Length: 122
Length: 505
Image (cartoon, rainbow over all chains, first blue to last red; front, side, top):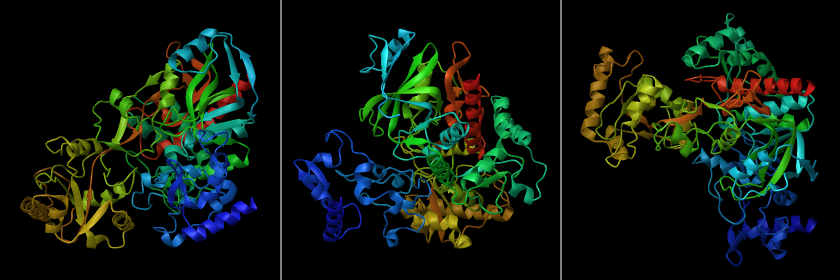
């Protein structure tokens, strides 16, 4: 666990991004996030329970990153302070990581369904 | 509760057989009439909007045992989380402090019955309205903050009784009810899609659920069976996002009409309940609003912006630069007039609506609309004509004629009431309009205790309950603004009392 966090921090510094990390090819046609490289070295089961064919759940994210309210965002990038997706006035704690983030492909966050100009595809 | 595998011998093999017939590729062990339950819960609530969250919380507080909430989407709150957070509460403290002391639940019901045009269910509306102050207390006790001193009169209601949550979004309520439920031991699960009900002799005994489902792909995740010991409460909302169903019940709703609802408002559980005998009523009664914008999702800022435009501005067709309606007419009249604006290939020619920018500097309704690019500031009619592809000469003529009408306070073309009209002067704030589908008055027929009625016997289906927009026949032809939130939260209180009384009995 400790090595995970260390590697994660390192990954953030190297990629220079506080967000989801860039997509890159990790195995065959499968894409993944640059800051998750160390997970791919350990195989699909690092995140997927059983096999890579089973959809991963939030627990895969929360183990390293913490839960939604504890992950800090760069608030200077928000349209205004209340438009903070990690402290959403619509969902607060009631949002899955997967509502906004995807590992193997780019995804528009759930907020963008209505707030079309606030967020970018990640 | 996890992995408790129980085998249940079904009294009627036919029930399992019929369930299997509806679902191709079912994993039901229909040959031997046995179901292998993966889990069980005392009360299972389907959906996590106002109605589902309230039902779950009150089921728990009634001491009904374990409560499990299943939500198919990746967020808690359903359409309620993105609603406007308006709540009709007769005799609320803000109303009383404004000196309005002659309101009552019966007064609200009277307004609703008029709007229902003979099709509303007065007994259910009374049952709900009588719990309005319980709903208010529920919100306050859960930590919901209402706008200070704010209590206004909204469409179709004869008294100011609509209060609004601080941020103007239903999420102010759903997040609080969810967090209260988590603290009280309710289990909530996202990405659980209801594939079918498991019935036994006219009684619902459990659910076939797609776990780890990813909307909208029905093939994702895997099927499990969850046994419901005491009740299944259906709180899955309306079906305004289900284009095929919408078109089947009301073909007049043009497919170009967007929808204010969250994407999950697709009504699969309504259809599943119907397949097991639940009586659908008023399915073709679907509410639209003429106040939508094609340049934003959901309900958006458009309604608030247009509250200026309809009075102080004009609506103009981009096809010919002319006005085409009384901007202050009712939503049906305006919807029909707006939707006639079509290009030759029948695609929408979204009309533009505009008013004077400098009359509303700093107005939040304008500021946020411009910021989020669902409205634009233009410095001249020339720029407007260019940007929205409107014939300039006609546009200029239309504005000049309107400005003459403002002086005479008379609109010879559309007989608009001109008392609030303003002479138009650049720069302007311009937005585009197209109606949006908003709410389904129709759905599953329920009795006053929120029991789902079987259309074949006209009797309640055992252990099956429904609350909120998934129900039908409560509001009749028109649901009034701010009354759905009340209905959902109050029905959650009522349904828990019904279940409690039946478990005892």
